[in-house]
Length: 374
Image (cartoon, rainbow, N blue to C red):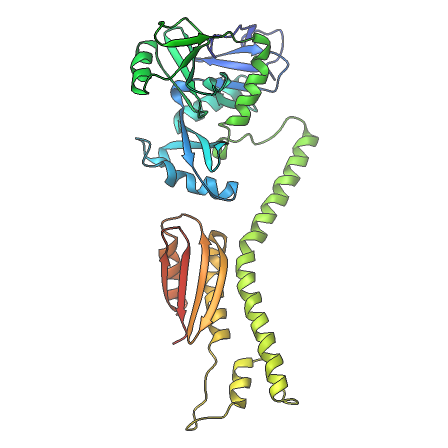
């Protein structure tokens, strides 16, 4: 049975009950309910969603979202800014399910849902309600369309006439049919979808990939009390992100403070009773023997301070992994976002602060800043 041909019990136009919940299928401009008494979910046509398996071996969800446009831009025909990208579940270590939908399509679905009174509904491609096969394809053909889910967890939809060419292009994988019977050379097995399992299948699809993300995320939940709780959680999350963004700059300054404390302790041991002023560099250099009447400058603290102040506006884009100082060179190793323009922005902000520095990105994506005190 096809994902979009499940038994329907009521359409949006039925006035007997407000359409606030349930699993709905989207057929043209009409929403049709398939399961009552279930969290509001809309199954959208897979033919209008491109499902991809994308390698994003990054340690956090935020970084994966930031890297996603760069990871898929050479795999889609449209400009990245013309499509909505939704990040789904991990389908293998470091590999994630991703949905790509044109903005006008996604906006139309959201408007349709709001008009029907289920603007809070999750939205998932209907092919994801098919069981994920251990190998080969799960296929549901009905009404001249064929929905296909593969063993990797992705899927697609094609006109029935194109199913065989697609199957042959994929090296004839084993096929289990959940819809109309397929030719004997294509169909390895057949199975029937239990209508009572449609709700759990929809819930599994939402867990795999909910398209309501980013600009199309559900903005409020039913019930003012619950909404207030979500608002508090969101506020706490936003505050945490601000703290994290400032953390790296604070780390730079804390390293500088620690070095200053060590320098003060060393100076106190070398010259007990000598008062050190607020300007530690000048105080210490004033204690050193002068050669030819010239003072020896101490560049570490001023350089670290200038670099940290210059980088403060970009703090949320990187994490400081290591800092070393040798001679007159300060070296910072950063774990950074994949933003292609970050290196040039770092160079510009350091130049604007009067810091002479070289900024390079390694093939692995890390950034090294080498700043000179000269």
